[in-house]
Length: 150
Image 1 (cartoon, rainbow, N blue to C red):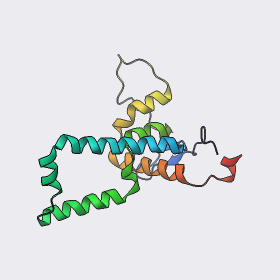
Image 2: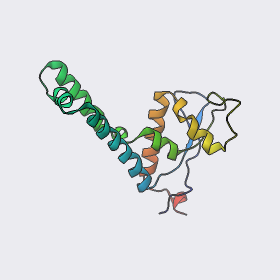
Image 3: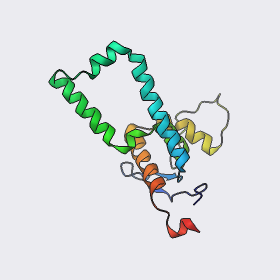
């Protein structure tokens, strides 16, 4: 099934009464791009640490080290953490109820609704970002409904 142009209805944001988002069903390639960006970012962080620092961090010697390793394993076990949120949300959020012009100034040029949303993703709080990421991944990976197949 081709997924271009398949969107959700307005989905209420559970922790923000009255607010909603609308999401696109992402293709396998779009999901892979967001996943690869997350991997590339992680590799770059390790590279910046340098060999000795990385060895010191990953060497499990104390209870504190064990706790850090366990937290990292839990984070890695959550599928949402495999994706780069910036890429995922930029591709997946198609509309929302927010109307405030928080990030805009008088000197910025007028933009289309899609460009405005992409430019404002960085203004969202973490709870909303994580919720939206989960919605996009779930919607993109679920089986198509009869309505979507038509």
